[in-house]
Every structure is written in C-alpha cells, then in structure tokens.
Amino acid sequence: MSNQLQTPVKIGSYQLSNRIVMAPLTRMRAPDNIPNDMMATYYQQRASAGLIISEASPISSQGVGYPALPYIFNDAHVEGWKKIIQPIHDVNGLIFLQLWHVGRISHPDYHDGELPVAPSAIKPKGKGVTPTGMKDFVTPRALETVELAGIVDDYRNAAKLALAAGFDGVEIHSANGYLLDQFLRDGTNTRTDNYGGSLENRARLLLEVTAAVIDVWGADKVGIRFSPSGTFNDMTDSAPESIFVYVLEQLNALSLAYVHIVDALAGDIRHGAKVVNLATLRKAYQGNLIVCGGYDKAKAEQVIAEGLADAVAFGQLFIANPDLVARFKVDAPLNKPDMATFYGGNEKGYIDYPTL
Image (cartoon, rainbow, N blue to C red; front, side, top):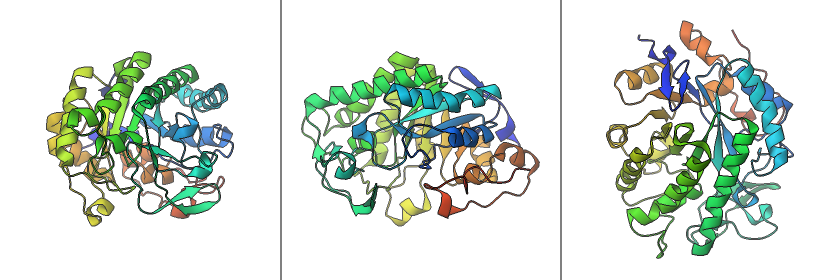
C-alpha cells in the first residue's frame, strides 16, 4: 500500500509534515466555557497530526447550542486558548480554530428564554442538548436583514481573538446543519430578501463572513468546512449539487488555505440524502481539499492516490489514538473509541487512551 498520508503537503501558507488532519471534535470538556489544562493535554497528545482543527467554538453567546463548550468571544477565552496552543507549537504542531454559530440548533435555555435565530422560522425535527438535558427543538426566530451585518461582525471579532490567542489559522464552520449551512440550503432558507432564493443570495452571508475573516487573517490561513450531502440536524436541499458547486466556484477566486468536505455518511444515506459526488466537488474547486467522514487508512490512501483530496481528516480514530500518525506509519493496531465518553465527563476516554 502507498504511504502518501505520511508525505508533506502545502496547505495555504504552511507546509504540513503529513496529510493526516485531526478533525474538529466537540467533546464538551470546558464546564466554564474557558479552555483548560485537561484540554491542553488532549490536544498536545495529538500534535503529530499534520494539522489540528480545533473543536468548534461559538463566536457569540447567540451562537451557543451545547453545554461545556470552549468559546471565542472575549479576552478570558483568548487566555484559555493560549494555554492550549503553546504546547502544540512546542512540538512544531499546527492548529486552526473552528468558528461556530449553531443558528437554530439551540434552545431558549441558552438565551435567557429568547428564541434561537435562523435564516427562516423553520423548526428542526428532534431534540437538542440543553444545560438540563435533552429537549425538543423550538421554532427559531428568523433573523432580520439588518441583523446580518452583526453576525458578520461576530465572525470578524472571533477571528481577531483567534489571532490574538496564537492560532495558526481558522476554519469557518459551514457544515452539519449550523447557521451558515442553514443559509445555503433551501430546506432551511425560505427568505425573500437578498439572502434567500437564488444561489447567489443563499451564498451571500457565507461569502460576507469569509471576506471578513480573510480581512483579519489573510486567505492563506483560512479554511471552510461543508457537508454537501449531510442530513444531520434535519437538513435538506432540493438541489444540493447546484448550491455547493456554485459556492466552490465562488471560493476559487479567494485562494483559501483549503476547503474541508464532510463526505456522505451512512446515516445521511439512510436519511435519504441527495449525495453530492466528491469528484464533482473536486472538479468545481481548484484549491486544496481536505475530506473526512468515516475514513480508514486504506480509504484515505486511495482518495489521495486518485487525486480527489490533498489530505484526510480523522475524527473517532484520533479520539482513541492520540498517536494515530505513528500507528498509521507502522500499520499498528488501533484502539477502539469509547463512544460513551465522547461528550462531557473527565479524563476517562479523553486523555487516557494508550499510545504505542
């Protein structure tokens, strides 16, 4: 088998030592919403990844939808993140911060009784995690057109704070049914203003956010994540290939560090996803492509060999194998992830997985 995963690759302004990326993984280990020492240990253990993409971090109190997340909207959050980043840099690792607004995937319990916001007042099916347990989602409040400049400002501010904290770059979270994804898709966006309807209008907020973040960081230190085939968080679109190909074509002009694609997952297909083929996305986007979605080593090597991706992000495998890069190198057996400890809790299932 080829060993292309272990070869260097240039992503934006950085030369990655390998093509094995740590995917953004929500772990809910920050009870006071400030990154902590346990998190620092967790990330440093995995710093041999060519690139770490941090767990998603809300850019504002309005963007919160899960408990015990590390935030990125004030100076205390910056100071917390500094403790995470320095140990990674000490071993020549790289880390991008993922910027997050959950939109409708929230609950009034996070907002002093106020409704969560969304492109349109469409209630997601299912239940969400609140500070006091699982509760039904509510019908969100549709954002007013005049409010959208403020959302862009929140992304810009979070990008500035990420820069102050010492991150190597940022990834804009526009996947998995959260706010920017909600604007892109016609199943969640039925607006009649300049931010709804046509492909151009539905892509407008994402492109404005991207411009604001590039303004802070420079394009070569900015990535964006999409899930074109995703159904998670009750997402649908009548023609997903059209909107995502349009967006990727618009992004070609910006010279981003990368685009990060979540491939169609088994759960998406079970839920009737209209699968957008990776080859179609690769053809539309001329820059670096990182892919993820249940990849093992063999599938990752294949997708790189076929030229469909430049690097592959791993989630559950990195949770259970802090030394995943070394294990892949020698084809060592992999630890099995303990799903019961994925979200919340203490060191167990977080920083206690054995290394080679």
